[in-house]
Image (tube, rainbow, N blue to C red; front, side, top):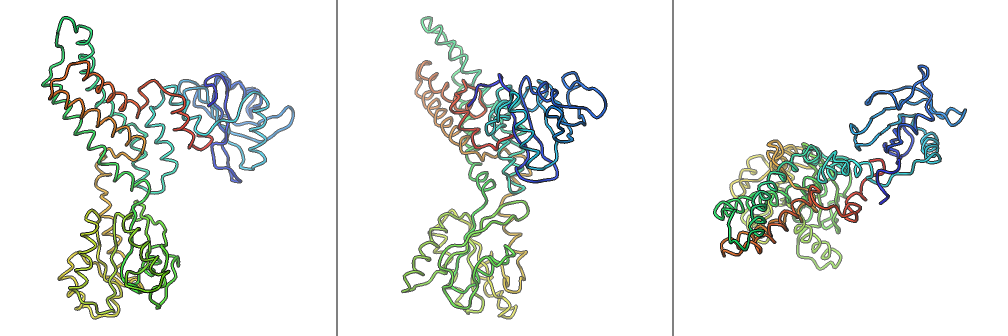
Length: 465
C-alpha cells in the first residue's frame, strides 16, 4: 500500500473498454487544483478550486493548446466526498484512447495510478464508513441477484455495524468496571455486579450465536444455493436442467447413462441465485466411466443444500420402492431438503399421479419435455429460499472474515461465562473480555488498524473503487 493522504490518485471508475461515457476519478488534497490546471470552461473563466462542492461544470480538457475531449467535471470538496478528500470525477467520451490520454495527462502532472480499492480505503481511513461497510461496497458491485444485493446494501448502510456497536458498547461498559477493579485490586473493591455481568454475557452469547447461524443462509444468498438434480438414468434430469436454464446446456438422449459428469449452471429465480447441478443417473452398472460419474453424483449431493429427486412416470416404478429410495437418501443426508419430482407426466393418465402423492405428499408433478408444471417447481424453490428473512431486515452475515471474528468472539464470551460461574478473579475475566472486544471490533475496524490486514481486505476491490 502507498502512503496515504499525501498524494493524488487517479483511476478509471467505469469498466474498461469502449462505451458512450467513461468516468475518471481523482482524489487527494490537490485533485481539484490539478484538474483546474487543465480545464477550460464553456462559460467563461472558471476556477474549480473556488466553486461550490457537489457541482457540475461543462468544458474542455486541455493538454497545453490541444483539446483532449469535451467533459463534464463533478467537484466534491473535503470532507463531504466519498473519500473524505477533495474528489473530482471527469465524465468523458468512452473512447479507450481518450480515457488513456486523460489518465496519462494527470499522471505526468503529479497524480499516480490508484491501487485496487484505494478510494474506498481512503473513505474508511477518513471515517466515512467502517470496515464492514467498506467490504460491503465490493459485495454490492459483485452482487448477481436481488438477495445478494439486498444483503450487501443492508450492510453498506450500516445495519450490521449498528448491531455490532450495540453489542460491543454493552460489553465495553462492563469491561471498564472490570478494569477499574484491577486498578484498586489492593483495596479488594468490586465495581461490576457479577449477576448483571452474567446476564449480559449470556445475552451477548445468544446474539452472537444468532449472527453466526445466519452465515449459512447469507453464504448461499451471496454465492448461490446449490441444487443437485438426481435420480435414475433417463428420468429427465438433463431435460429439466435445460428447461430451467432455457438453454441446451446438457446432452439429452434416450440412451440411459448419457450424463457421465456433473454439469453446472446458475439461474436466478425470484431474486435468488440457484446453482443447478445435473448429475449422472444412480444405478448399478459395470461401466467404469459411468461408475465414476455416479460416485461424483454422491459427492455433489454432499455439496448441495437442496436435492431434486426425479422420478420417471413412464417407468412404472413401484411407489413403495421409490419411497424407500428417497427415505434412504434422507437418512444418509438428514440436513438436506429433498424435493421429489414426478417427471414425464405426459406419459400417464392424470389419476395415476395421485397414487404417487399418497406416499410422497411433497411431490411436484411436471413434464420437463412439454414444459408443464415448471412453475410449481420454481415456486417451491422460492419458498425454500426463506425470502422472509430478507424482507424482515434481519441482519445476515455473508462475509467469511466476519464469520471467523464472530466465532472467536463467541468462544471468548463463553470463556467469560465459564469464568463467572467459577468465580474467577477480575484479571482473568479481563483477558477474555478484551479478546471479545478485539474480535468484535476487528469486524468494523474499531481497533488498532494493521496495515497488512487492510491491504489484504482491499486488494480484491476493482481499481477505481
